[in-house]
Length: 324
Image (tube, rainbow, N blue to C red; front, side, top):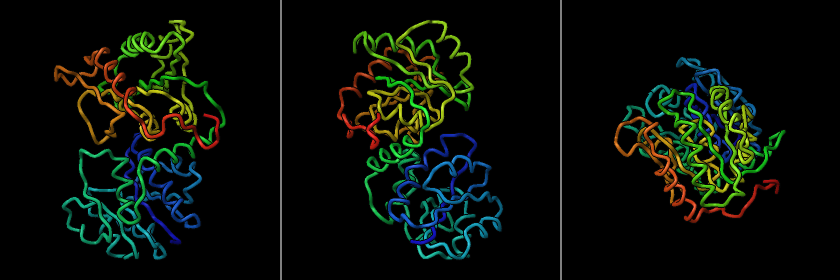
């Protein structure tokens, strides 16, 4: 395979970009010498060109721009879009030798040489990997974990390790934010369970300045505040965690791909953004209110206990660099 073009769904949120990272990494493992091009309708090239396994980024929106971005040298085309027929039309016009796309009841679904049925109850990052595996099979968890190890090796700084990592972000709005006070109450219960030596890292971004100030004011030495750090450092932190608890936010996908025990806090069940496995759990309001603030910290604690007791596939393993 000499030339691979991937059409990314490029919504403005970070998580929409991260869910494609393991699939892109796996392409590089299959075809180390290929030229890997990412095409997106939004200006999100910085999220992809920072990855050493991506060679080129093209911003394209119109049908003609996408036609030119595909070019006539592409051997393998992958379209992660599952709603528009635009990318099927581009595939029909150019006809690369191998064409991968989601089957979702569209007029152009027939054009894909290899397909994966779009299922809105399937985690999006897993669906992207399964689309690629329709052409060449691989294990998604092994791919996800290894891609996070590769990402972590790009870090320039190294946060202190922590048994428990909390990710209380929610850039899409307050409806995705479990109150920081609830995280602290959960930390208290986990400390009782795991012992007073347990250490916690809070991953915070620019939108969590209030949470940062409040946590800093508590003066608790067992809390490490990881503020506005590159994703390579966050991936490193997740790989070394015994447990991650997160809102539905961009960094949560780094943790899910790290394949460690994971609890997601949601305002409602959302399997498209949650990778369901024996060592993961989703928690949402038990009263059906769709208000994330009504998630009881004791329910989150019970979920943490369950996932900690489950067998995770990489328990006891460290990143390839040996530094996690």
